[in-house]
Figure 1 (cartoon, helix red, strand yellow):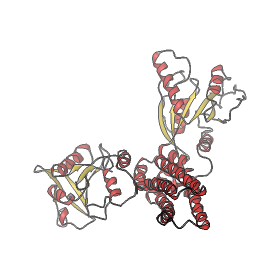
Figure 2 (cartoon, rainbow, N blue to C red):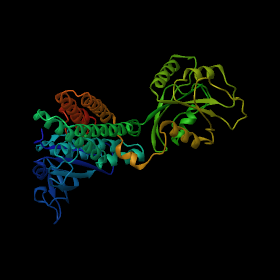
Figure 3 (tube, rainbow, N blue to C red):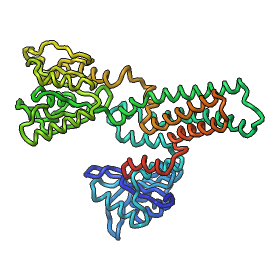
Figure 4 (cartoon, one colour):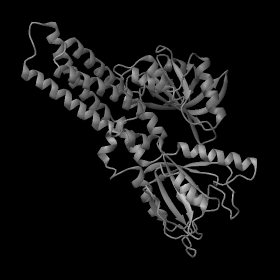
Length: 458
C-alpha cells in the first residue's frame, strides 16, 4: 500500500564497518522521532530537522540504547522514492542493523518487499520502468562495460529514444483516428504516403534496437563457456589462468575434477561464465559417472566451448570423437602444453569452422591471445560507447517484437486500403507495447514480476 511507511536494511547482511537502514513513507519522520535520541547541540529530532542534513544520536528500543548512529533526514520530493525518507547509518554486523530495523517496525513501519523502494520511485515518477530495471543491472554489474551500460540506461538514454518512438506512433494514431471520426474525408494519397513513411521509419528504428538485444543480454547475464576435453589435458589449469587465480584443483592424476565448477571472468570487458567440467571418458565409479553426466548437461546449456587438446600427445580416438560430437557448437580449440615436445600433428575437421589457439597453462603463454579469440567469438566488432546507450534486455526485446509485428500489420493494412478501424487497432497495439518498456502501459503483474527480482532494501 502506497500510504504505508516501509523500512528495510539496505546493505548486505554480515559483519562490516557500517550498515544502513532505510525508512520511507508519510510517517517516516514521526516513526524516526520515536526511535532516535539526538546527542550534541546541533543534532535534532528528525521531524524538526532541515532536509538533507545528518544528525548524531542513539537509537532507543524499549528504553535501552541499541547503537550510536548517524541519521540522515531527506524530505520529499527530493529523495529516491519522492517520499519522506530517513537513513540510519549504524555499526556493521547482523545484530545492530537488525535491532535498528526492529525499532522502526515496532513503531509503525512495515518491512519492505523486494524492490519496493525502487517501485515507489517508479510509481511516484522519479524513474520510468526502464530506468528502474537499470538500478538492478547496476547492482549486478560484473564488468565495467556492464556498469557503463546500466548507467546509460539509468540516465534515461534508452528511455529518451523509446519515448521519441512512442510519440511518433501516437501522432500517427491520432491522424488515423481523426479520419475515423470524419469518415467523409478520405486520407489524401500524399498524406497516406507520409503516414507510411513514418511507420516504416519506426520499423527501422525498432530493428536497430532489436539488434542490440544479444549484446545487452551478454553484458547483463554473461555468456556461458564450457571447458571440455579428455582427462588431464589441462582444463582446470586453463580455468585458473583465465580467472587469474587458483580456483580448481590441479593434479597430474586423471579424473581429479569430479564435478562442474562455475566462475565468472572479465574477458576484454565481457562477463564470461567458465565451467570446468569433469574429463569426458568412461566413468570408473559412481561419483565420476555423476560428474560426467553433469558435464554433458553443462555442454547442452553452454553457448560456446573451449575444447582442450594435449599438444604433447598424438590425437587420440577420444579427441576425434569429441571433435566430431561438438561440431555444431561454437568453439575454440585450445592446444595446451606447447612448452613440451610437440606430438599433436596438424589435423582437419570436415564441415566445421574453429579457431585454434596454442597455450601453456604452466606459464601463461598464449592466454592473452585466447582472451582475444573469446571476445571475437562472443562479440563481433568494436565495443563503442554509443552502443552502450541502448542495450535492451529480454523484456524490451519481447515488447519491441510485438510492436514491430503490429506496426508491420498497420503498414500492410494501409497499403491494402483496408478499413481505418483495423489500421488503428494494430497501431494501438504497437503504441501500448512500446509504452510497456518505459512503464506507460505497465500492468500490475508486470511490475510484480520486475520488482520481485530486486533485493529487499532497494
